[in-house]
Amino acid sequence: MIMSSITYISSDDLMLECSKLKVINERAFVVHQLISAYKLNLMMKEVSPRLATESELRFNLWKFATTIAGGTITAVESIYSGAQIAINWCGGWHHAQRDNAEGFCYVNDICIGIQKMRERFQRVLYIDLDTHHGNGVENAFAHTKRTFTLSFHQYESGFFPNSGSATECGQGHGRGYAANFPYKSGVRGNMFVEYFNRVSKLIFQTYKPDACVVQCGGDAIVGDPLGNTNLVPRDFGKCIDTVLQWTVPTIFLGGGGYNAPNTARYWTYLTSIICKTVICDDIPDDGNEYFLLYGPGYELDIPVKEINDSNTVEAFESNYKTIKENLIKYEVCDV
Ligand SMILES: [Zn+2]
Image (tube, rainbow, N blue to C red; front, side, top):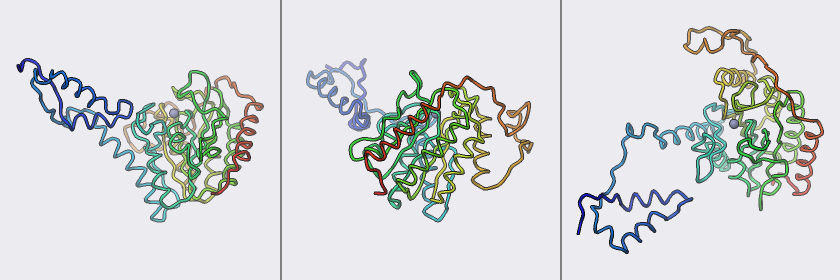
């Protein structure tokens, strides 16, 4: 007997889409089969669902994901068309995993971009400067030698995503082709830049990448509400200078950065370094609505309120040693 007062929403399409979530796999079919085995579905009014409209969704994840990933794919295509450098400050969502969103990241445009780059480049070096570990990208390429991932990040108990110790260096066939440089809160520019240069040059000379992708998450800049560094744009400018000296095709991406005016200052400064031009410290008032965000100083320079530095030269030296030893131990080369 059908009880018209009870509606059972079901369709093959609904169950099929639901099954694309790896974490639950074919659960929808399993549930439906059991309900059917008891013939309970015959007691209800079975209704096929319609699709939600764009306005009902409020946030169109599909459009979001295709647009964000499309930005980085276009950056790769511009490299194919002859550009030496491509910039996508709207990209860099390094935490998204193959089958789950994570840490504000719904789509890993970096992985999709690197995957595309590997159609033409044999070896891609990925450098992650965001203050959080670039776990999504590292995981995606942990098993391959064709992408080397290097991440600098805060690594302390309770700090998201709780991974990226210096000993993590890839898995299986890709063992040795990942490196992590953890730091504690309050890291300062002189130490950071020195060790960035030493580590990145060592990896560049050993791995000899054909192309680079650099994620420049703005949460690594002093004053970020989620980050805890004493780093300023000038420090990263020196790091970027090192990368630019390699003269391999390079893509620069954004990422985190939860202090909007400081992130804008940072990426504008990096853009000027990439364009090899000097810009003045007084922010130009071109009448745009965001100008007031830069008050009261209206300067490109970021005022530094220093926080206590918990890092030591010994710890940095130990990171460097571990990374160097792994390169030797796993015979990392230009495969
Ligand atoms: Zn971050």
